[in-house]
Length: 287
Length: 327
Image 1 (tube, rainbow over the protein chains, first blue to last red):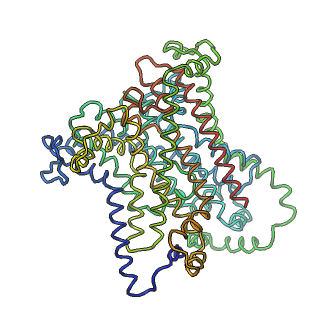
Image 2 (tube, rainbow over the protein chains, first blue to last red):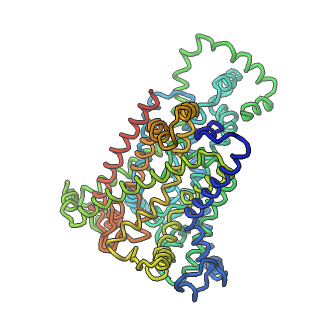
Image 3 (cartoon, chains in turn brown, blue):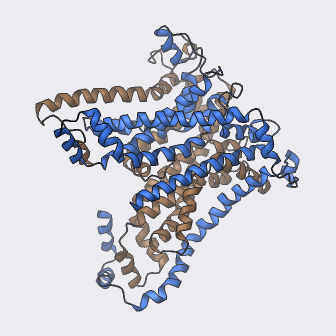
């Protein structure tokens, strides 16, 4: 981390440095402001009154702010949010349950054909979502699983499982072999070793995987719109989408829903930023 | 690190014994017998995920190929007795007047998005390597566009680019430029979705390239500075060449993922107006789900073309990555 400090030779440490970092911080703030302007605008519009919505030029600050948009969210969008929460948690459980044992086996048990399996996971990540959606649609139609929450959980988990296996494999390779050997000498079978040693030690990677699995299923639109569209339980992404289609006048309500739908991302960024960075730099992430 | 030290506390006596026996190399006799039982254990752990891979990746993929080779109607889709028609769906797709524009839009969307995402991401990564006050916090904030659900980003951009009430046109008006019909004019819609996609993709490039920059030895820059190289020369002679492996990985991965971008385009323009922002991904969805009368066969055929493209570049990516690990 600290080596990067010297990528650009600095002026001598001391008084000059304060001035240099001052304008760098200013530039950084300006760039961040430009980058995050759409986020600010989403917030601003979510507080704007209906009658000000089409004002030209628009208000740059919500001076006559209203909470009508958020009231609409409370009135209409809570079921969607609850569905998304259930689907997100379901996806996390399914993903970890499938991927953690696989990661352990690939990292530590040297299965014959393990290389091929890892390769298949890398390839699986590259299949476009629309293809998976169409395939799932055809299968669910014949199984009668369309418009069902478990069906969507399974479909959403395909977004995260390959990534999760890669993360777990990479992380569990770092667990010292002597430790597992010691457990074996003490008579622990592979299952016991996995449950009492490998899993507790992999807490960090479980957090990383869970965060991404939750975030991706929470954000999923393509599976939701193909597999549960029109069903009794629809996730928040469909809630927003139908909002846009139905009443393109009430943009404060649409943007308020968008703000609420962004909360998991915000929470993750604040509480778990290092896990996110770990996930991204693991190299095997979605864009 | 403290994760490893926590463990022994729980298993006191036995653990110490185990650790002692683990220190010398494992006994010779064991390995010969172990492999079979270990193989069983390994595949026991892998069985659920292997089954999962077959059921939820291989089978949907197979169904998709099957869809593209048969003449499906809504009725035969439900009953599953569609007649086999070979490559007819593919020929239909190639002859479709949408094919050429969709191909061109896919290429333009992918290439232009990648170029801007990479250039902006790299510039920001270099900027953030100068550790100034707040740099870590600001770098974290740059992740926001990437973490937001795509429907949130896409609908926010839709409203910002709205012709009459959007903030972008208001800003243009303030500097004396006429309003642009970003989403409703065929000549601008592709630009608009590229703009939004670049915004979403910059954080990924920033994070990966930033971590790549960390591995360039600082001594090189010091030596170059002593030789009188200015910042511009240091970038082009040191940073850029040494970052080439990371750049290749970033761009190839970006390529695979940009090819399949669907949500942003569909939510902002539905591929329109008049197919002016249609790519293979949205066209495939349009054929399969976008109309009252679904055309699953051609939809699947378009999707399969996309799979082939994604896999070709994906394999190139894996080759490049493996070569870099080897060296």
